[in-house]
Length: 373
Image (cartoon, rainbow, N blue to C red; front, side):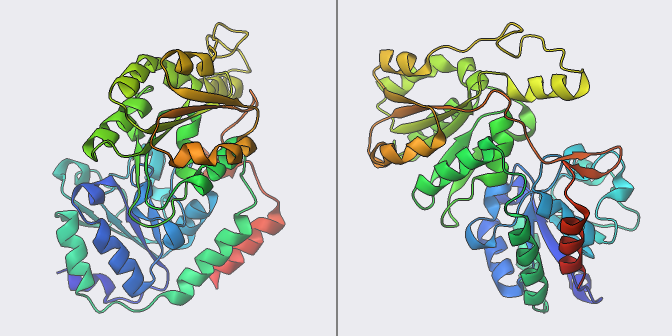
């Protein structure tokens, strides 16, 4: 049955993987399949660590990488594995999702498959690992040319959509060792990490809150991760709002002697909520900014009170001075200051299906021409 997938001629297929593929233990098979076929792999936010290093292109959806969403609009086949294809991936109008592509969905959950995304889509209720094993047995053409088009378009867009948050995350990623374990909290920084936290190696993990929306999960994720790997070094990226939700867990870090490295991206606002108030409610802020009922403590002093070494950085560029802190066996905290108006881009407006902020027509045409060759 699965041999029919590539019986027709597809020129621009993509593999779309979600966290269900990780849960099924299909991660190694995904790398093997990508290496065998050179089919570009995109991810959901929850599965962003499934494709890293040289294979990384981006994740799709509301705040996904612009190139990933543009590739999705130009491909002619989407093979979705372990991705639920919820609202933030497919949008309000599902007929506009991957408009030129046939859709094949593999998911173990019959209730997820009960929703139709496209007319005439093919559905397989199957374990992701079994599905990838069967795909690897197929005689799939080599798609190196299509992959090179995607990578060329990605390079063209690399200098766009970079806020201070993205640049801070890129700096953090550059200082991490190969194959790290990183826990990410919920907020603007969550999307910055999904967009820009490109790990070295292909065995690293990014534990991300995803659809749970659980502010405060970052530090507990990091604690659990460290304990599960014999109290090894783990990393936590969080925001000033999320960190205050479980700040008391610093005592656990100290008491258990866990070498957790905490990076707080501190713009002194509840960023994701204040951004919505800014964009959708004409800047009528409530309990999200310093002037509307929200405040931030001195995180460095609090960490030091718990016996954890800490530093306040005026810029993410100062992280280079603390490279030895990042690799030693002691916990530490970096309070990294960002501008208060640190916004999250790009964003898809589902009413229009346009990616904002808009780029010049010349840049868009260049990307589209590369992908359409």
